[in-house]
Length: 436
Image 1 (tube, one colour):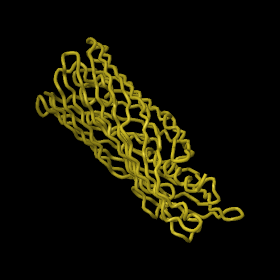
Image 2 (cartoon, rainbow, N blue to C red):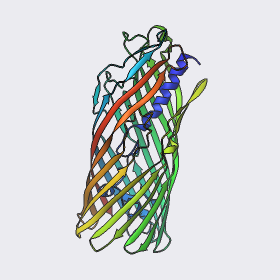
Image 3 (tube, one colour):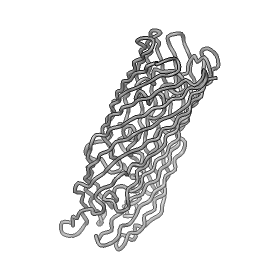
Image 4 (tube, rainbow, N blue to C red):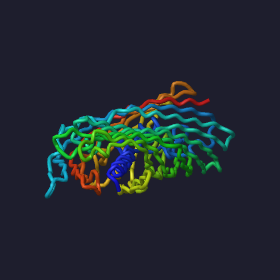
């Protein structure tokens, strides 16, 4: 295979990796889809009712008394740091190769950008049993941005992922004890990725790789149920399917000199990735007139992101990722201070699906704990205002990855990336719910 094609394969594969940047939930999932739920660490959403819970359970709107519209906004502020821990680059210099430090700035402060996650939902009552719903969310949006002189530059500079998810729902109240719901999700994805490429001599400036990938509308489905065991106890369950995405990208490689100059290219490629399935199980138990306890467990099928399949004119590659399925658990409480004010609190444990060996600067992910408080003020009989603040503590973790740049050629260069990662985040959420 030609060196140009090898460069293209590496570039398109890295473009798909943009989908695996760190977010406010493990790996690349943004769970900020309900302001009300944020206040109790999302522990009760799968068993709660109304348009604000549509992302978590399509059965949440069955049997509504009124139409509902919900809108929420989540400001995500991340404090992160990524430090070099002895990364090296081995160039193909006879006889045994020339190994040098990657150089550059040894500390990257704040590479994970702050962001805003909006979400909207509406539920329309057809009759006392049937309801239709629509939600618009941004479940996989994130950006990381390293300085061009960073020690991570051969692995990651800029990574930008944007998604839009539009979900249509039909929900039906079977009887006083059972609600069912089903939805179809249309999801659009696009991405941009840049990185540096080393020339054969350490004295030469770096080359560059730039990729922009535009996806198509791809489709999935979701189902859910709520069982009202007693007037005080509701158990909810839901399943959201995986979605297979195909990104059409253009790779531009520039700045390679000497024997590598022929690898400067501008061409097209396609990368295929799969977002995970999500299974939720939870309950809400009103133990007295003022207090409701919430609990949930979510199984996330990150194992679907096991490889990246890349095709381009004349060939293709497969890049193994080896993500693992994870289980997230959460507990929370709602307390009705009076008919107009409800306060909430919750805690969540969310483990990382990324492997300890193979973790990259594009995926500086670790296990995390989320602590949340929030509340609802019922301004009128029709309008409620939700607010929440969450603090996310990331476990310190390691970047540990070895990869070959220009593989299978005489210019093959080995990058041994090692680093230390630490961080935390604060999420401020606010939203309105209107019933009519």
